[in-house]
Image (tube, rainbow, N blue to C red; front, side):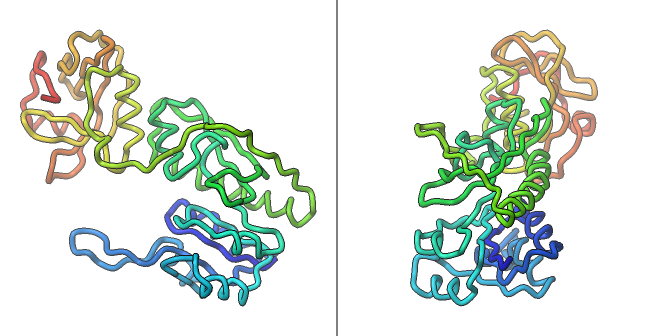
Length: 310
């Protein structure tokens, strides 16, 4: 099967790797986002998908838009039987969606119709969901509204971060993709239309979500910490300085007032708005490296009874 692959970040890499290794699939081209300047030195860096494609001598296209005749002509020249889209970051116009023999399929990291949109993994963790999964959908002109071709569920660990879940779902998604392609080739797909209605949109994550409100419940704050890891990271003020919180667990300690330190040996235990606590395990002061709580306590005076977040 002749396939054009469209994807950009690390999440899409396992899918492309599986396709490259498959004897039944020929990847005629990869479409990905333009290179971006990264880091303090603003070094122009290719997307992870491009790096993998170049390694395997696969032609790479990085158009600024797909909504012009040039992009469509390129697709026609490549003449794919199927287009596979995984976290590409651009909307495909109808003429491209309709062109391949088997259309375009998308690997999406949620149990659709829940969490359509850009950040389904982070929102599943932020909302404290107990399960999530991957859906492979037949793409249409809507945003993640196409018929479901294949679904794989997985539980979310109570302390699992969005970064950890991201890695797991990328592998689950790659397996789901290959199973879906097998179904397409054998003519055994059973497309299931998504129900109509508003099931919520997983909007992009931004820095305004970082600040911890200690008046919230321990569970909500714990979810914020693990959901915003590794970017932009939940943060709070300790001794007048901003500190990123990278890792926490729900604590068995009895709480008191919101934001009050109740324990300071090896971990930093903070009382939350519901009278329960969380243990802060890893944190990072501005301008310094990430460290465990024991190391932080060795260099910073944190007293029982003091308040943070002020």
